[in-house]
Image 1 (cartoon, rainbow, N blue to C red):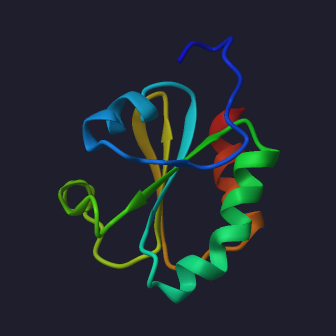
Image 2 (cartoon, rainbow, N blue to C red; image 1 turned 30 degrees about the vertical axis):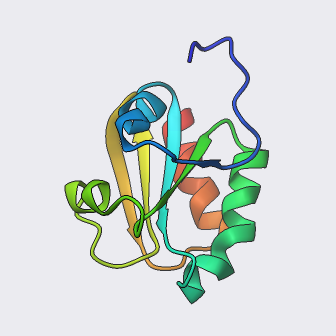
Length: 112
């Protein structure tokens, strides 16, 4: 994705774990490791969607049940776990439910 492409305004559901690195390679990406059965993950959904819509970050949702290998690779031991990637590098890790403001602040810190 080049810098001229529009940033998606809705979260992207990761379908193929081989595409993960491509998704986080450019710009700022908030990765939401979640599961459908996780209550705190469901509570955070509006905040995650707001970050996708209101910031210059891409939001990538990774279902830990579907992508256990990826969750293990990034040391996800409890969900939700949210990772901020900047320029392909892991820049921040947040574990547990976060407010929309906390997510937006984490993204803004790396988009400046």
